[in-house]
Image (cartoon, rainbow, N blue to C red; front, side, top):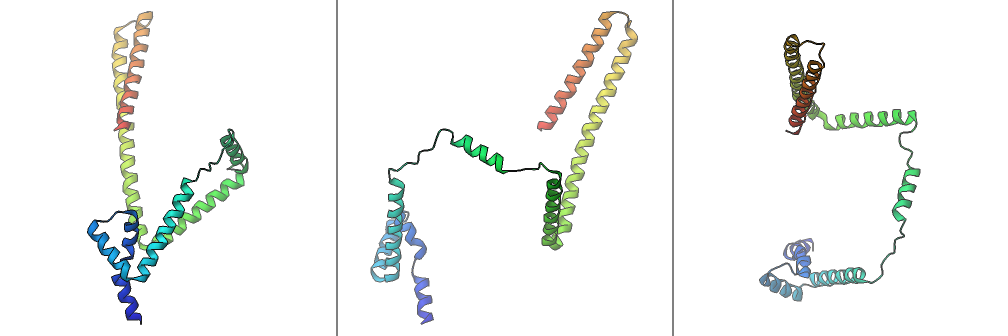
Length: 191
C-alpha cells in the first residue's frame, strides 16, 4: 500500500497545478496535465480546490465595500502610540535595556561557538582599518594646521600688526584655510 502511495506522489504533478490554474505553463504541458486530471482523482480534486480558492479570493477582492478612514486617523494612531510607549524615561529602564542587550550578546556568543574567534578577528581588522583612517584624517588636519601656522607666521613678519589691513588679511587667510580643510574633510568622507 505504501509503495502505491509513493509512486502516486512521484507521478502526480502537484506543484504544477497552481501554475496550470494561473495559466503559466506551456500548451503542451497543459495538455499533459489535463490528460492526467482525467485519470487522477486526487489531482482533479486538488485542481477544483485551487479553483474554488481563487474564485473566493477574486470575489473578496472585487467587492465594492470600502473601508472609510476618518480624517484624523493618523493623528489618533500616533497619539495613542506615543502615549502607550514609555521609552527610556526612567534610569532603571536604561539599566534593564543594557542588561537585556548584554544577555543577548552573550547568547549570540554562546550560539556562535567556535566561530566567535573568527568574528572577533574580523571585527578587530575592521576596527584597525577604521582607526587607520581616523589617524590619517587627524594627521592630515594637524599637518594642514601646522602648514597654515607657518605660512601665517612668515606673513606676519612681513606686515606690521598695527595696521588694520594686515590683521584683516590674516583673518581672511585663516578663514579660507578653515574652509579648505572643511571641504577636504567633506570630500574625503564622501569617498
